[in-house]
Length: 122
Image (tube, rainbow, N blue to C red):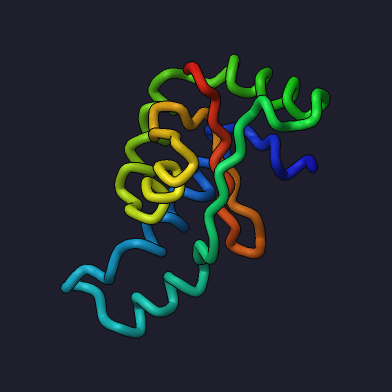
């Protein structure tokens, strides 16, 4: 459960490069071997889930709420920009009736599961 409540800032730093690597192809200036090596270092996103903070157990919800309360607006905006750049993430949110602006935190676990935590009002 501890991995679910990582700081948005730390998670964004760790997941941002993974999300970008999972969604972008190598730049023309990179050689194929360089691109393959870099993508092996990053965790690939294998599945995406959307969880409403209100659905979490109270103790976990309070930890997530505390982290969100200490997260800077610039970090949240950067998080939203990263999510908007991933069509599958936007689609997963839409399927749950949510939008990027409702995402308050994310987590990418070692198995490549991207979890987006949302709140009805942000």
